[in-house]
Image (cartoon, rainbow, N blue to C red; front, side):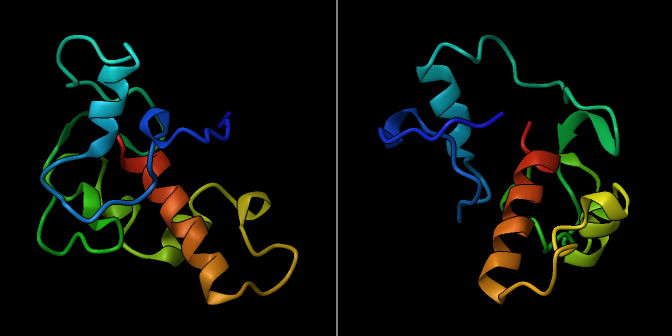
Length: 116
């Protein structure tokens, strides 16, 4: 589960714009949670065994393009991510979402699916 952290130096980010440097790695190291190589993907459904690069067509979760635990086919569109785990996990099951709210769920899904 996630915990809200007011001190941003101790918080993970769900989105970043430099696809070469994932800021969550530094946060994990600073908190003593990342030791050794970060070369294993820890989730099993729809995930690769080890993080690695994805093709240029990997655009929906672009921050993780150079080092991702998710395969392109898993996150190729917001619709694909929404439907991956079944209707009971659809983020709009209670009604239509604003574009901003839907973007939040896409970012959350990318973070969960792709971050090593």
